[in-house]
Length: 188
Length: 188
DNA sequence: CTTGTATTTCGATGTATGTCTAATTAGATG
DNA sequence: CATCTAATTAGACATACATCGAAATACAAG
Image (cartoon, rainbow over all chains, first blue to last red):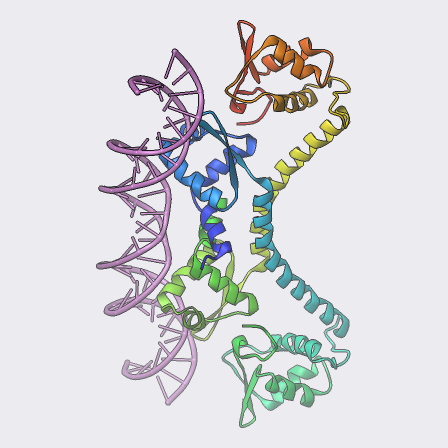
């Protein structure tokens, strides 16, 4: 029932623990040293070290009665990277969008052709939606005009926009739907 | 008096906020949507969004009375990278140590020569200290023996170890000092 | 201007947890 | 075994903050 990402952030979200990590960056330290440096009592430091150890961020070796605590840099980096990975993936998806648009849209904004693959067509349709703001009504003629600034076949594209639930239609009047309604294969 | 790194971790260290970020990964969302998906009331979601906005992780655009909140992937990545950077630096220092040892120590453990530069000599001295455990006393003859397994000039190296406060000496008896005492140019 | 809806602000409440002192454990020393 | 020191554990306390209901705000639509 533990959420590893959450536990990692919780472990890092404390000023004292960040201080401990900072001190351990230079070299290993005893509990006493840490307590003195951070102006805390030994039990408090002990408590924080237990949390960091539970996350595998800190290891300890005993030497007589004192314990020398060291930072596990590899573990810290592994965890930090696991945070970055999902971000990198969505950014990669974004850059795919950019690539598709670059290949189908001319510099002057003309749509060179309508992509045959559904995935790429969706990306182009999202891009067309930039011309429609939420909360406004558009007559059919207005919709056609806006689309024709990019492509002659406004009828087809208009129907696609409605089919993807990006634009809604009633009595030849259209309006923008919220992105959360769009059927673009977005997950969740 | 704000600590940016701490504030970032605090912003991420909450289950509800991680959930919000997860949902915003797919597409922008309204407060209502988020509240329903996470089983929270709107005021609570609003509160969390304020915290995420303060960190620049989330942006909002208004559409009528509803506000569509979106994830700022670039900001998130920038922050995550600023976390990784200091780790990478200390790891680089570690790999420098490894490089120095590889060039001065033969495969059989023999020290080929004593580095002239203070920085590299310190690294080699730290490596020699692996043979001395804390809490034990060593007669001078024992220290010499241990060193001579790596290099013939035990007198020089022994004095260097004492000079760097890695070994302490009293009446021809030596013992290992805690790493925190070592004078190796380590910061803090 | 009034009504209705989405959101935010305010104030109260309960829980999680950072910190401390006191007591306990563990290891070294004699 | 008695003593000393370093660390941990236990328990108490205080504060931070996540959450909620109620009230206020913002905006659209009659």
